[in-house]
Each structure stands twice: as structure tokens, then as C-alpha cells.
Amino acid sequence: MEKKQFDALLPLIVAAVVQKIIDRQQISQDDAIQKLYQSQLYTLLDDESTKVWYYSAEKLYSLFDEELQSGSLKLPDC
Image (cartoon, rainbow, N blue to C red):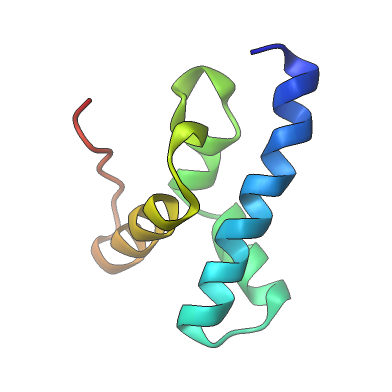
């Protein structure tokens, strides 16, 4: 994927995951954004070459929640 395309897509993915964090953890948008941006998941999501952005918002939230609970991120085997 070209950088321009990825740069246009990433905010849409982030917004969907942030909304799931807000809904499920009952926290503010600012807190949800901060938590996501501080996660390992976001580091991988921000790197197009990892292809983490292929996952659905639901799967990304699940990975985010697992990371919060366990302190580490484990991606599914592909």
C-alpha cells in the first residue's frame, strides 16, 4: 500500500478502536486515545509493514485489551 493511502486509512482505524475503548471501558475520548497511543499495539498499527491494520476494529480492541491485562502483546499466528 502506498504511504498516502495508509496515512488516509490509519485515522479511520484508530477512530474505530478508540470508540471501542470508550464504549467498553467507559472512559473519556482523551483517555482512550492516550491509552491506545501508549500501547505496543499502536506502535505496530502505525507501521504499515506489520499489516496489523488488516485486523478488524473488534480484533484490534481484543489485542489492545489483552495487552492491557497481560502487559504484553501477542499477535495471532498467521
